[in-house]
Image (cartoon, rainbow, N blue to C red; front, side):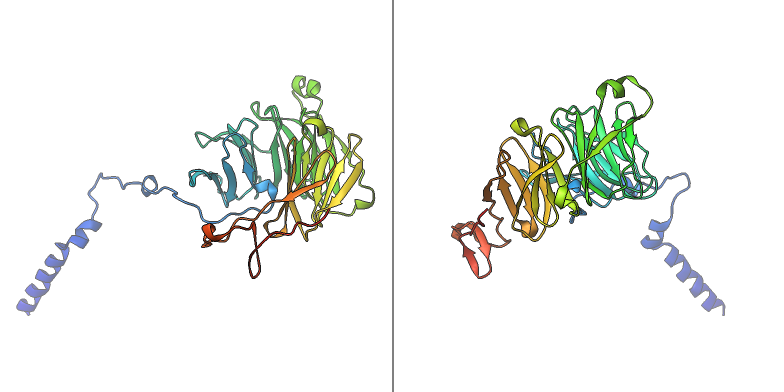
Length: 341
């Protein structure tokens, strides 16, 4: 028995001397290294965009911003490189927009007591946090002067806020009962327009009041005159630029490009010849309409005349050197047929 006992004791001693056990031991007084300091986010695969409100591009640098859960991906297409902004609240980001100079990015989020956050793009750090919504932020936008930020809540929030974000105060607000999916500022910053389900509304900012009064003032809103198109879902909106600064352009999900004149009247519209229209972008010379299946149609803002349809990018694995036509259709590469408008 004594021999067996000594054998068991020696085995236990040998086991305690093994390297695997030594690695598990921690000397008293030594602190464990924080694994978070060693782990960095290298690349994000995927995107959680539900509309144009979740995709933004800095026109100065070409930097593209989009959400992936609680992360904002800053993608440089020229270098094919990502940088990331991590939302410390871990709430899902629902909307974002660049400031006109590209220095800042504003984000909205969903969840209980969501915040509107402003980020320094170069440093990728948060510089402001604005809390006034209860359920979620549907869309956000900087004013052309970057002095104000507009945030529109989810339908249950029933509120639209105008923030003086550097002072962290709401300067103007009002209720909105419709489902809103997009917002756009006029070129002179005197008003902005919201779009949504059976909803186009013009909101007017009186800068003389909002600058002097410390309290929140009522935001003056006037509905667009929709006429026979009143039952449409207006998916996106963009205020005109240059010679068409008094006009407002929007698209319906059913595939109509509409123009409102300076009196808020839906003056004219054209068909996009698509099953679904998703987003719109306007500059001095063109109107770009994002449609189903990656189709982008271009129109002239002066008269809504059709200009062209952009060619689609090639499929992955395609030998570009062997391709001479612009678009791919079932059965091979063929010349694109442009619909007549």
